[in-house]
Length: 245
Ligand SMILES: Nc1nc2c(ncn2[C@@H]2O[C@H](COP(=O)(O)OP(=O)(O)O)[C@@H](O)[C@H]2O)c(=O)[nH]1
Ligand SMILES: [Mg+2]
Image (cartoon, rainbow, N blue to C red; front, side, top):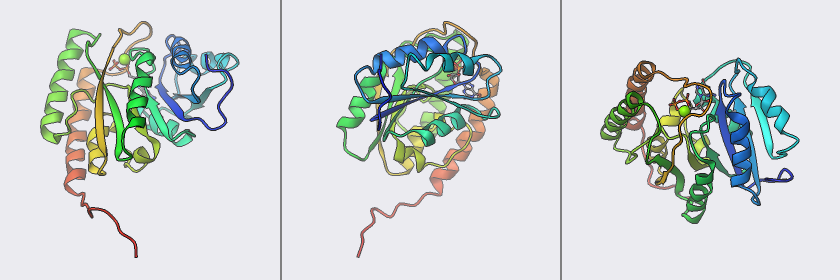
């Protein structure tokens, strides 16, 4: 377990949660264990949950001093919750993971270490789920969506829906915000001139609570987001570096 809160953490773990009271406490403990001995802070961002998410997390703070709980006044979605967490984060390196426990926190340090070992231009290491533990319908929809996105954006990413990612805070904050940008981080990082890498990670079935997304809802958002990201990319220009004097 992480003992006292690091004065200046090296790593900020950001977890967006919406109605995850049943899953969040065990996840917070697992994250603290995975990063034991490292200067970490753990930021859960409660997106105006209707259940007891905020209260169960607050009750854990005496046991996990590295745990911070931010709360949106109204629901603003997963991407906004990640952004709120990154803005509040004090470390230069951010790790995100889903709040339902489907990502295994034990995988997270490997992503952070690969990011830290890379050059400054390497801005992100994304997880790619090797054995998805989801319904058949969700897996099929995800495979199609990932295939279409990859072909249209050519971002080299096999699985942008994986919530487990490590990235540099400064690079993330250069990106514009839009709802669901968390699925387009590889394309948006490349647009900014950064390099990205991927690592296979494990995936677990949801042990508590229920999914917040429907296939149909996701499809609709994905189509308009894809068009938007393609437009942003087409309208980007690169000075090839900036010299002074
Ligand atoms: N902050 C926030 N997080 C959300 C919202 N909807 C989903 N999430 C979180 O996003 C993650 C993935 O959502 P989930 O429902 O598990 O999607 P699935 O795994 O694709 O079925 C979980 O951590 C959720 O708590 C939302 O509206 N706001
Ligand atoms: Mg999930």
